[in-house]
Image (cartoon, rainbow, N blue to C red):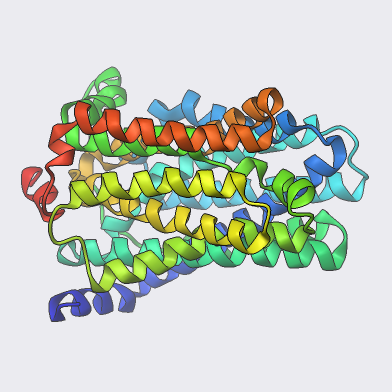
Length: 416
């Protein structure tokens, strides 16, 4: 790592505002990952239906896609800190409601879906505001390093959360304890963010309401490298994602317990974190586009290996490779959305990006549950991995500008 990069990372880390924000984001992500293990295990234990696991993702995705244009415009017009604080409060309420339902003896999983819709609404508003807030907490010259720090923090929480959630669930034998921990973490995150004082952002009030709402969509459509990067990630994860079915693989195929499920859920994040560290010391200095396409191809191949595996160690290894390969596309996408996008557009562009991310993750969970209901879990995940490989080939033809992308810094220069 160059001395400039080291200095930038250190300055970003030393910023009190940025540090408090990152601790809050870490706690919130940890809560989400712990809760996800409890929800998946609880829903599958209650109904033993693959499709019900798909509905978990769908309930969180629908608010995001329905509110996407509004949430992005709000993030560019309203104090982003206030949005984040309110969303943490609503999220804490959601986890508390899930805890209360579990203590009362959950029999109807539709109540879980209703709370997940509430959590999805909070995430819909928090996503663009969080993404757009980071550039207002650190100097512009250290923004790229702040993005790297934020990604690393997120990955650490994503590794620890599922494992911790599985351990707590297994020890307590009650998901209410996991939901209680998640509630406390979100309240702590709220407290940390209340006193943040980010720099003021450029106003978009001179635009008409319709122009403001559609600004992010138009920007992404115009910037073909951005469109290619986020749509490649969308279809790769939408087809190749296996997260929703992990409770099925853990229980029915690998014969593991809740701790085993936590290990499986944490494996992709562990691989992603290792790749993030590697890229911090050996960044994508050249041929970033080629590396992105190659990594997505590895993502698809590793997904097929996971689907066919009947050994826990091989499944964990395959999922770690899935996470590591996905991190390369995450780095390219984050540069395009957070570093290269003008500040006045950042909230709306982040909202569009989060539609793609949500579609690939939550809608992908629904797709996984649906195809598993038709084909069985093994064939559904294996076919999804093959589909990802097909998408890589098509996108290499459809988006030559992304394929030819050399240095990530070129994205910033083009949008300066």
